[in-house]
Figure 1 (cartoon, protein in one colour):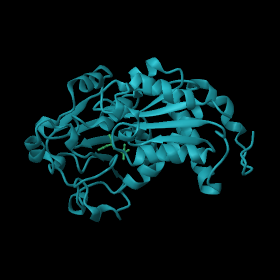
Figure 2 (spheres, rainbow, N blue to C red):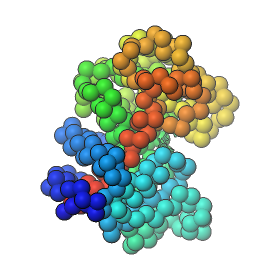
Figure 3 (tube, rainbow, N blue to C red):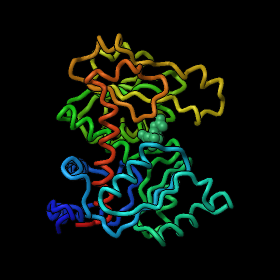
Length: 325
Ligand code: ASP
Ligand code: CP
């Protein structure tokens, strides 16, 4: 098959049917290294297509339902852009307040409704496990776009893709994750995914925002040697990747506790003077105060590249789960 713009897409077909056709994407635990190498390869192809001609008709006639029970800028709009650039259409429910959820409709009924119209559903929800529940009711693939403090698997894929693209490798790196490791679902997913690689991980947080024990135990079960510290100065000179996160105000029951830790880390150009020349600073975004704007022009600031990569990864995932060639 060739795209409407004449770009050959036939090479995508047999591989896309392999692992993901018709599958839900709920957790990073589903992925092997081979799967990741495959998705990253397709994402590279998607990037090339977008740079050259903007779009293809690979998913023409297919419909994506994008359902967000929590706020989003990047995840929702990059999925919408991904589907549009692949020639498909989108039902965007970015604010469930204006849907029948407000009338009391349950998650299963909402999902059953949307799958009558769409071929794949992207879901963000405040409850851990909501995507898994949705997947139990749905016949169509569900893609988890963040389930409360649980996971954010597509973010972890784009995070890892960015590390691979920017540093040329994943094995052998020292990845330091900084900030709200307790409530940050992107950290939970990325740390789990990094278990597939030979990496050193350090977790930098205040005491009340430490990585949850269940995630820590998973890393240890994979034989990872992990370090924890409160002080970013301890690791700034050693890290190859500094993965900075926002303190998740909306997850705190006690706002006074949030106020006490909200500005615990701020990455500045002064701090970066101590960092390696060949390292990257990442952030899933949105940032609040954790990274100084003065850092944005530093070539080591990878967060805008990271965000762009999200669209290529999501194009690859949509094509994969729809098994389309
Ligand atoms: N956007 C990411 C998430 O939804 C990170 C964040 O909100 O801080 O998990
Ligand atoms: N990184 C991320 O998930 O961003 P949004 O919350 O804006 O979707």
